[in-house]
Image 1 (cartoon, rainbow, N blue to C red):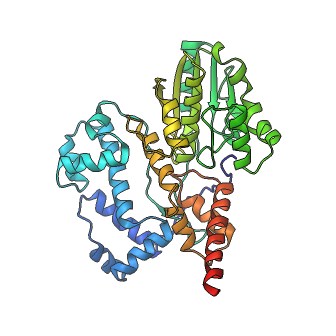
Image 2 (cartoon, rainbow, N blue to C red):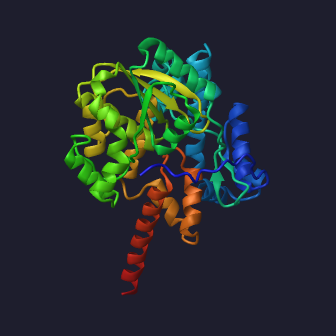
Length: 392
């Protein structure tokens, strides 16, 4: 139920691979404020525009157009947060014809306008430059870095000064829990892992109830006893002493997997009428920067029902990182999504090869090997049934 531990550190890349050349050229175009031209890119690489587009999507899992849009938007967001430049100047710098066009694109991706983001910078999904792995020319990867211990210790010390030891830290998964435990980052504060993957399978409105546990166990093809041992037992301090804690600190990543878990935990706190302070510590799993945001409870129970139970896009304002993740989650509810398309486009790769490639390519989803194996088997079984039907 946790994330996979198969993510690898891949410090080098393949500079001579045509897709890596395309990525480097696109990044140069963005940095130099040049307008992108697919025909010019194709001429540089030595292939037709159509074949360049095909190669890029085949090896990265994303279209050239979408890659440029996401990179420009993320870089523009960084400039909004870190500089006092005019929004119009930033818009033009990143290839938009007007401030209005920039605002529309920015809001579509992050759920808020550039002006609103500048006034209140909030966590968002980091979208890093793609880098092809040297381990296999047919796969892609995004560079990973070590957790910044000093940042974690600083944030924890800051919270402890306010609330002494009446703090419960909730960590996203057993792997994070073990890492925090081995490094003793939490000092004397309590901490527990949330060992779930709320972005897959069905759920119920009454979080952590008997009916919730049963339907979640069934979704994971687990017995109720095993589910309760893995997910429920580690959370006992949350259940038995919740209102004794003055502060709850939620440590979750910026990907879809973590954000659906975060939404579930926030909804649970609301359902239990928790009245203490709640912080969300965003751990960006590409750079491992940590950003702290104080959360105001009051809307998350209804958000949970809209998103997880009814698969609806909420209309109320959200943190950009949660907005991005909910959009990804809802896109996955369609049979025609980028994960199924990628699997279908690589019929000759083994299951293990596909899992490794998808772990490296689709880091913004944050899915683990278990979820990808389920996805691959489902897509390939459907393809197999289609072939059998054609033969008949």
